[in-house]
Image (cartoon, rainbow, N blue to C red; front, side, top):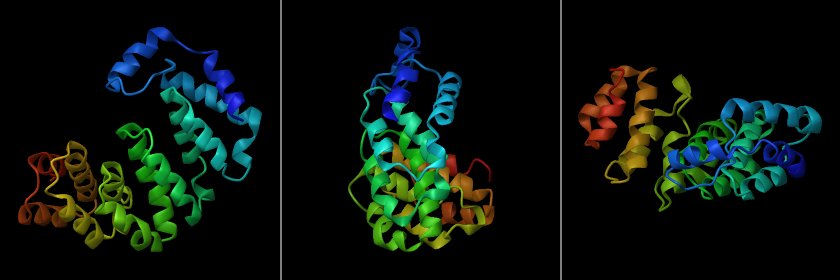
Length: 218
């Protein structure tokens, strides 16, 4: 499987695109230079040829993509995960914890938080107390961000008490990505319950960035 997708990607390498793509990501990762529209076409061709979407969820395929040097391979893993959400089970959560804590940056972590982690937590809410609770108050920046964001698309199914408790537990963080996550999740939840978010922001001390982001729709 990995050889097949590498064949498609390597034959469409574009050095002219690769450098600005790398610069946009703070020079943290090398790129093949394949922009999203072209990458989507290549991935679709791979799905059709391999039939992988008709099979069980492939851990080893995801890990093999994650181990590749260029960032497009991690994006391909994310795309495959998004297409496989209905197949995920509770025992898949450790895989996503590994991905969140490896080659970590917002471009992969945010989608992992919203999609697979959010999906598994909705289907198996016991993982919140078993695992996500530790993420929310632990030392790892990207796991804390994930704990704040995993309910991002829950709308009226949001556990408000949990959301606010995780925010309060991270409200004094100086980390940009924590402050931004707090603002983002408050802004999103304000579409569902603006009055609740308004009261929360007014009654708690949050970073100016979090307040600014969280108040955008109020």
